[in-house]
Length: 80
Image 1 (cartoon, rainbow, N blue to C red):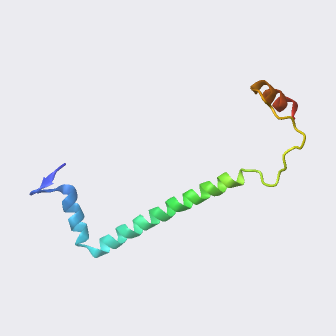
Image 2 (cartoon, helix red, strand yellow):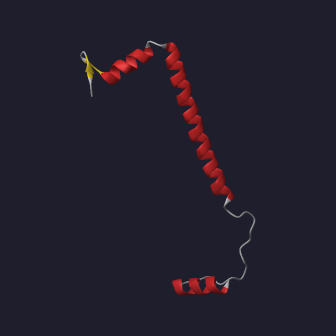
Image 3 (spheres, rainbow, N blue to C red):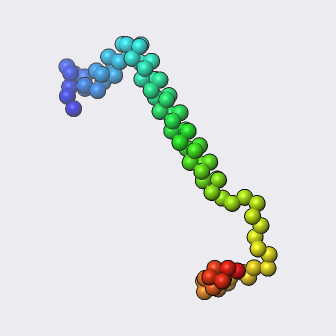
């Protein structure tokens, strides 16, 4: 990391930005836009996940309940 005087370059950059309200505004807008995009992606992911769950399908009544792995596999292969 380069040091400008006694100040690290990153700190000098941050201070320079704070002295320019127009640049601060642009950076805040970018940050807000990125947060909104991240939120939209999370909502979309949750909607996609929720839509993949079948709604309103009743379980087959009288279907045998498997007590062992073998029974579960047999039920799956026979469609029970």
